[in-house]
Amino acid sequence: MTPDETRQATPPRRRGDRVFAGLSRGAGLVILAALAGVFVFLTIEGIPGLSQPASTYAPSADFLSYVGPLVFGTILAALLALVLAVPFAFGIALFISHYAPRRLATPVAYVVDLLAAVPSVVFGLWGARTLAPYLVSLHTWLAEHASWIPFFKGPASVTGRTIFTAGIVLAIMILPIITAISREIFAQTPRLNEEAALALGATRWEMIRLTVFPYARSGMVSAVMLGLGRALGETMAVAMVLSASPVVTLNLISNTNPATVASNIASSFSEATPAKLHVLIATGLVLFAFTFAVNFAARWVVGRSERRMAR
Image (cartoon, rainbow, N blue to C red; front, side, top):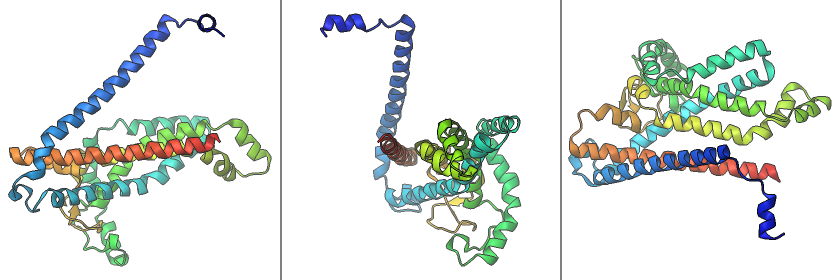
């Protein structure tokens, strides 16, 4: 086929298609430009924070010892939120997509989606004023009966404002994100595959385990990674709930709690000197790089799973 014949065989693109393609391409370029701008700002303003006088990092001696506990606290709070939220999110998504009748599934889905619209400060106020005092008795019980586990070594906090409480608040905040994405992925499972499994004698749970989960694996990973990204970067809710200090500890229920990068920036920004401000921006650069690496790894896992399913 000659080039002229190929051009004639290809139907001309409509003006609407060209406009939509241009808008989509422009939106993608704007997002990339904004991301690059944030990275450039953090790099320019944060590099001086790596080599400030030792007094700037007090009570630490240098930047690595300053940012290390903050990264640890960020990871600990995010992982705790995932452990609490992911099972409930997948369960709610399966209930909405495969178990509940439509007249019940629709309002439940609306309620879950509305949780994503609640501002972070509302979750923070609720966690600090209501949830934390309510969990004091649970902290005491864990310290008395499960102190042999390093996570509940105690002594129990008398205020309830611990990393455990912050993890619960974060779990509630990321629950609608993971649930909404998982629900849509579960609902897209080919109907013929589900009916074939049921026709061969599989129970409802066996059908879900053998047809829904394999089909939705990449989407489930994406949902969890999006929830993790939200938990890693959450600021106000954690800052309002957590009574934090720059320490490294696995004890989840004591008064001594590790701080997160975002909450430390929020609590220290208003009173920071110019040198301290560079240090805080440098910690923001570390959080930016860590979050980018997590999302990059998630995309790699999702792509690998999709390629495996395509074989």
